[in-house]
Image (cartoon, rainbow, N blue to C red):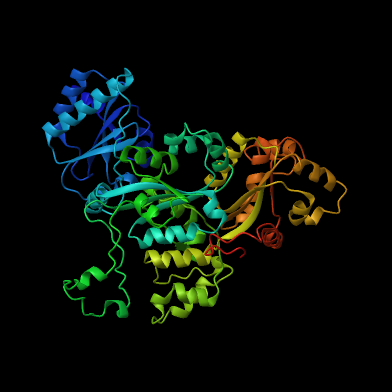
Length: 556
């Protein structure tokens, strides 16, 4: 019994996603023995772990856990794996993985990582930029290949500057980057914070006009990209064959050797992203960081969840019987399996929609009953036991994209951050906008004179208090934005909160107006009330702007 007690004390048991998330909060190094429920943890390594725990005597920075792959959603890639897996987490980031009970390698890895932590704590070294291993995939093999693919790719960070967006060049630049054989792994339209600008452009911080440049970059919309290419095989452009008239064999001048026909073919681009942009005269619109250490640091700054961005979106559909009887149970299972529900809503399908979603049953004699069930307004009266799967899911990424667009079409709304919001408050508002799932499609900073304000506030232009609104708007420039997401108008109004900040503090204390509003007129933000107003205001204010995101409709 005493031996068993020591084992429990040595390694904490992780058998749920919530315990896994809690474990990732550990400071220092956590050594994770990933095991299968049918075989248990690797007992052969416990003697080594106990020895290291006693010899190193670093309980504050060295932790040992056993994690059951079958019960932890994040460990799905390692399920059904018959060999031991050891993961090494440093401050919540998985930085190393060892397959098999390789005691010497495990011993060396633990000692090296613990020594690093001790030196960091003593101020002897700065924290290394470890490569983080992403736990993605449907099985261990996918996990291994995904990790290898990450290691085999070279990443760059590119920032398409505001002047490019203002002149409609963003799409052209991105298309050229892709056509040159690079891959855009992630992108985000955002207003950069002052810290982000100073971090990315630290190499030009001594230039005399740097502060002016920082101000420009923090008041306009930029597009941040993570761009990659393979380190094993440099991506190349499709060969651009020169026209036949230029490539037809011609008699060379006397005394000159014949030209190799292959030299008449333009070759694909085989150099860095920065060199490519210079060659194509796009470098004045797009800045690039390619130093590996800096790129890793900047990815953490701009895309802290980059390792999860490879995960796919899919459409899930609960048919009426399941929706009525076990909706909450199903949603809890979905969440417990590590899925994140981005959007949800009840729908009553048209017959055409139901036939599309139930196409697999169209040759069955109960097909009409299925359609009747799926289109029922009162599903509780359609509880017949039909031999169909009560859950539907998209069968491919392409189908998922189409179906998500159909059932959750993006909607645009106009949003205004008023002059009274400080620069720091603007940054916090931008952060809340991103957290709420909005995309910033367009943005411009403008002094809202009466002429401009009338285009936004036309519904209240004849009200007695309108002069007060104009006076507030005249105190400085406002930020006017087009925000996009499903149900954008209602969601933005919910995020803003009640018009009066004092009322908002009571009814919706986490809303923007409650947190940043001063009074009824200086209430920090404004948004369209309905779809018609949103469409008209957007057209009025952004009529001269070249659309940067044509695939997002302006109204739905």
